[in-house]
Length: 128
Image (cartoon, rainbow, N blue to C red; front, side, top):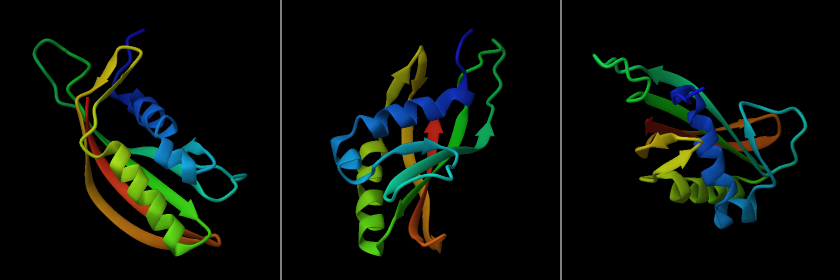
């Protein structure tokens, strides 16, 4: 079965877990969310998908919004992790199992404090 933009998170995860700067800070990279993580860590999720229909019924050519949250015990560490994630993903391209990510750019960011952790919330626009 051919992969579609629904699998974009797999490319994002591969880029993050193979980035030395990200993994020098983060203990793990999780899809969606986890209950049993040790700080610092990264969680990612697909939060939006815009299907760009074509006459050829091509399942690709979609735009996906990926939210990436960087959790840490201190504010400074959360910012350092977010900077590493941005450096790994912003303007990057990738491929996994035949699915091609043509571009990935930072679209938005905010910061919050939740469940005893500082969280940097980054939103990326991914072109598949």
